[in-house]
Structures are given as structure tokens and as C-alpha cells.
Image 1 (cartoon, rainbow, N blue to C red):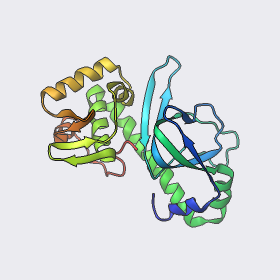
Image 2 (spheres, rainbow, N blue to C red):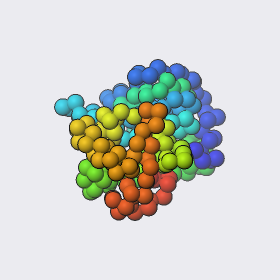
Image 3 (tube, rainbow, N blue to C red):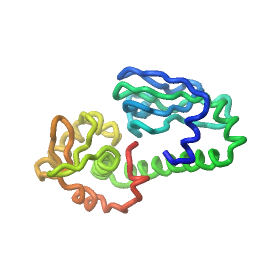
Image 4 (cartoon, helix red, strand yellow):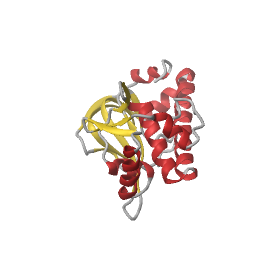
Amino acid sequence: MSEDLKELLALPHHVKSFAKDSYLFQEGDKIQHLFFLTKGKVQLNKVSSDGRELTLRICGEGQLLGEVYLYSPDAHYMLDAKVKEDATCYLFPIKELENELQHNSKLAAAFMKWMCLNQQKTQTRFRDLLLNGKKGALYSTLIRLTNSYGVEKADGILIDVHLTNQDLANFCGMAREVTNRMLADLKKQQVVSTMDGKLLIRNVNYLKNEIQCEHCPLTLCRID
């Protein structure tokens, strides 16, 4: 969060805790709040009519989240925000935010930058999913996870989030069985392994070369 955007934290709000597997909001709910995550992790998902799930982001401590359609009184959420780890949030009423943005040009500019950055992240995610095939979808997801939640270790970069193969499949919009096969191939090549139940990326450059990485700024090449 930029220094200018931190002015948002002074707005009227209330604090609420959410247990794992509960929801901050669900698709179809009326948009009433902007959320600031002070603890835990929350994943944003889209579920299709036939039950398939696409995970777009995992947000962590210190991040804003929520679909914000300013000055649109009838706007509704298009995603689900599911709590992955017990979470605590500041909830900012949208009406309070709209009123403040009308009178605070500095905060308004910072908020617009935040919205544009999120839009760019989403665009680059869909570029990877649509243009690079299944392999590109998985490899780019692993790269983004290292940028967002990676911890340097002697043997590589540890993704410090517990993720199942189904979780990874949901990020890529493909079947778990396909993800299982691709991860098994990467393990055979010693590109990835596991440590304490988490993924260890042993050769991130291999992943980047395989998808002809465009070396996007780290502000965009993220999963949070």
C-alpha cells in the first residue's frame, strides 16, 4: 500500500474477524464495503454454473481487497472472497469512501492507481492463461507465487502458502489430474520439490525460459 493510500486507514471503519473457510463476500452480494486485511489470507474465486472454480488471487496481510464500483448504488460482487487462513479485516463503508474521494484529491489519485494496478494484474493473468496453454498457465502461476509469497532458501524459493494440487489447478482453470502430471514431470526434472508440505521452486529460471517470460515488473507479476 502506498503512503498516499494509507490515508484510507483513517476513514471510519469497523474491525471484523473471519474464520477459515468462511466468506468476506460472495457472488451476488450487494457491494457495501472495501476490506483491508490485517491478518490471514483470502482467495478470490469465480465459480461457473457447472461448478468449475477459477482462483484469481490470494491476498495477504496489508492488502486492500474488494470489487469497488464507485457511485454505483446497485453494484453487486462478481467473485467470492473465501478465507484461506483465519483473517481479520478493517471494513470501510463504500459511502464513506465515496464521500472522502470527492474532497481528497490526493487519496482519489492514489485509489485510482490502486484500481488500475489491480486491473493490469488481472489482464496479465488472463494473458498467461489464454495465450500460453496449460503449461504456461501452471508455470506462470508458480512464478507469480514465488514473487508474492516466496522465501529464499539454500535450495531455491519456498512458496510460503499451503497449496494442494487442486488449489493450483483452480489457479490455472484446468483439471487436477493435468496439474498432477505436470508437477510430477517438474519434480522428475528437479525443477520443483516439497518442503514441510509446501512447494519449493528449485529452478525458477527454467520456468521463465519455458514460457518465454516477458519479465514484467514485479508489481504486476504477482498472485496477490
